[in-house]
Image 1: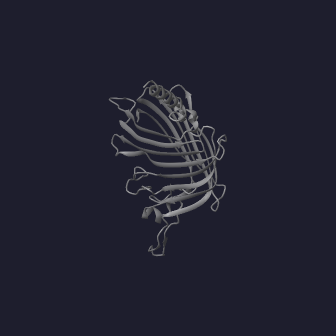
Image 2 (image 1 turned 90 degrees about the horizontal axis):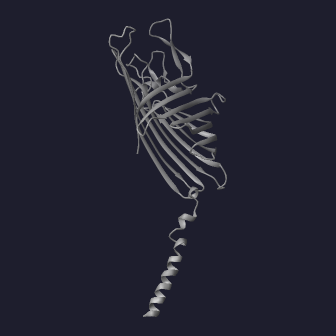
Image 3 (image 1 turned 45 degrees about the horizontal axis):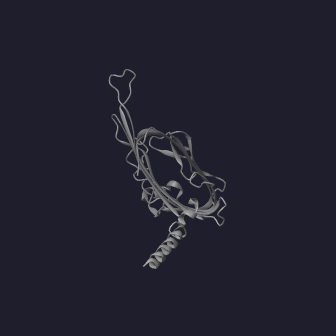
Length: 319
């Protein structure tokens, strides 16, 4: 009986001494090299309001609201990363004596897959996909009879591959793609026939009878350069910068489309925050129109810089 007890104690000791090599093998792998999925969701509502009662300087009562949702799901291990994010925003404004107007409208889906053959390198081979459009009709206010944009009119799709540099890829990234395919969708008959957003317009005969409908898709192949940067400026103040530069090989090579966003996030507490944002765009395929001397008639005035700025205070919840 004593011999059996001694053998049992020896076996238990041998088993316990072997545990670090089996049960705790993950502790031997550096954290940065472990396969890891991370997810983040954010829902936000921003408000602004102005009200006047017997105000001798004059003014109109107004209320604005902006609803936003952001989701990301990212994978990372020793050699690969796969970042995915979805941004949705919709904003409206109501002024006294006027109908509700849209102030912001965005659906933006991104997926970025990267691979580095050397674990010590900061260079990645990358493949990128982006889909961007809007939810509802856009108008040139006060005219709400003829939409100037709709869902997937336009819709933009980018897909390509290249090289990406980033020591910490979640905070700093430089990306260069020598071949990126761009497709512009105009899935609305009236806008497509008018040749909106760079698609080929419809062809009519001398009596105004439609001979050929306008194209619904415009295809391009060119160079894409992007840079993104995230940083904490000071405590509770964050900065996010993103710029995309694209030029097409076949159509006006060297004429660069620009999409640049710069956002500041001011955190008051866990739920209340303020946002100051700016977005600048230039696309040579998006032409503007100017009124002529004849009332109700317009002529093409070429492409111009588009700029939007917003400031909002509201609530944000991470989950």
